[in-house]
Structures are given as structure tokens and as C-alpha cells.
Image 1: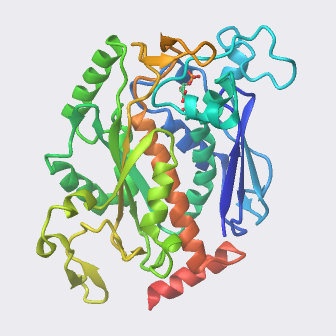
Image 2: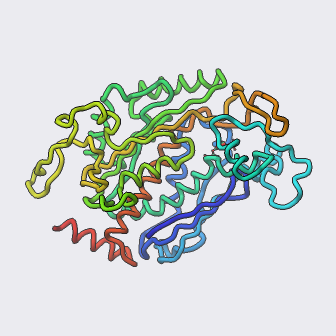
Length: 398
Ligand code: EPS
């Protein structure tokens, strides 16, 4: 079993992660992690924080001479904002002291964890909720998941993503994107998908759509508003048989949905063409079972199931789509109530992003990679990476 934990607040000194259960012998360098951390900052529409953070990981344990050693892997990411931004963010995460002289945050933002979090933990200052609920945590999540992702890459499994919609600028209705993603997948697997998306500053695979989305973000920023959107994650090279139908918590689709919805701000998830499955007759929805071109293996003539049937991977590309709500921190005030006085008040603006759908798409890639790595090690796992490789190769040969 592999698992990971993260700790840290958005403006605390650092984020900490522990990855546990990786087999020994997986090649791993800081670049394997830093490359994806840098990709998480891609995207027009991020706020001032993007200019501050460097996000280079420190590997503190569990790796020796560029390979995992089976021990827990400890990771650390500095929060540059904690050090550089002190005048802007005075003592937000002071560990000691009494808090005297630090103005409490008492105006909860609708749509944020602010109010429910303060009520749950009994705070009269919302700051601790803001700090841990912040999507800053996803930086360490990407770092932890990139460890598993490095292993997948050495087994020929790639995960990629692209943005499908930002606000009213979306690709869903045209169907053209599925064809384009299909071409990229056939040329270079899911890696080709994410590399092509990374060329666009909103991670969209179409130039006209990119221009329209950038314009839309600019207009939204000028109006003091924020935007959500949607994205698609694709995984290629995934063997048949990951996950299982025998128990609810082993179903791969359920595990992927949980992984996506666990990312801050995500409100909906779709596997394959799941939503249209509600309105399409069975004869037109289910993917026909056919032989591959060599006549060696059974495959599917289409992939509306998104590579998963009965909670089990079927060898087709895995397709997961996520929807992110608009960011709840807006320049334009929303209606709220001051929790210290009970008075109706407009919300107050804190530095934020206009949209972070491009970032969310890269975080979703990372979490999908983690779920696939976990399911893969359940089926083929061993103490050493060599054992994993051998078991997978043996299965592929039969
Ligand atoms: C976030 C607010 C912004 C974002 C942040 C998430 O940070 P700050 O409060 O410092 O302006 O930039 O995202 C990140 C820091 C990140 O690394 O993605 C929030 O309130 O959720």
C-alpha cells in the first residue's frame, strides 16, 4: 500500500510531505518533481503569488544515489511568501505568541471553507481555516504524487491533461477536441497531450480558444470577478485489470472521482462520456469489443467508458474530467456576516487568482497518477521496482 500525507499552511514557513510504501529502486530525481511543480504555475489568471514562489523540492529522505530505497520519502517546499511578503502578510502563521496586535479575519467568504471551518473548529478568527484550506497545499500534493508518477513513467504509463473550459469559453459542445486528443494520444500518448497543452497559457489545445479564454479572463479581472472551468485528464499505457468490481472501495472509477473531488475547488467529475450516457441509448453508448489489428488482444472500438468497465481498467486510455467552481475570493464584494458582530457586511478582498483552472488540471494529473500507481502496486507490487517490472511484463506477455 502506498500513501502520502501533507502538512503546512499557505503562508507558514514550508510545506512538508511524506510518501510511504514506494518500492526500492525507482529512479527518482528532484527534476522529476520540480518539472511538474513548475507546470502547476502555468496559466494566465494567477495572482501575485505566482511571481513569488520558486517551488523547488528538497528530498530529505528515502532516496539514495537517484533511486528510492523503500523507506519513507520526506519532501519539503519552502513558502517564499512567508519570508518575502512579511509586510503584506504580517505574522499570519506565527507559531508562538498570543496573537495580540494581529487583526482577526471575521468576514467569511461565501463558497470558501471559511465559515464551515471556523464553526467546526471553534475559531473566532478565520485565518487558520484560510491557511490550510488554501490551494497552496496542492503544491506538496503535486510533489508527492510526482514520486508515483516517476515510477509510472518507467513502466510506460503517462498521464496528461488539457483545459476544456474557462468560464463561458468552452470546447465541450463541438466534439472537435476529442478528435485532437485522440491524434495526440496516438502520436505520443498522454505525455503529448500535456506537452501540447503546456504551450498554451491557459492549457487549451486550440489557439482560438486560448485567445478567447485570455480575453475572458482579462474582462473578468477588470470586473473584479472570478472564473471556474473544466479540464480532462488522460492516462495511457494503463494495463488491463487495475481496480476491482468486488468491493465499492476498490473500484478504480470511484477512487479517481474521490481523488479529483479532493482537490480544492472541484465540484464535479465525469469518467469517459459519463454525462452523455444519461441521455444516449445503450446501443449507441457501449464500446464494441473487437480484436486489435494484430488479432492478439481484445480491445474496444470506441472509448465512451473512459477506459474503465465495472471499476476495472480495460486497457483503453483512462479519461477523467473535472469541473472547478469559480474562485471564492473576489474583488467585487459578496454578501456575508461578520462573525464577531453578527452584522451583515460585504466581503473584503485578499490577494487571489482570477482563475486557476489551468493549475487545477495539472494537480488533477498528479492525483490521477497517484491512484493509478496505488492500484498498479496492488496488482503488481513488490519490495523492489525490479519485481514490479517483472510482474507487469509477465502479465503483458500472457
Ligand atoms: C489561494 C490564494 C492565493 C493563491 C493560492 C491559493 O495565494 P495568496 O493568498 O498568497 O495570494 O495564489 O495558491 C497558491 C499559493 C498556490 O501555490 O497554488 C487560496 O486562498 O486558496
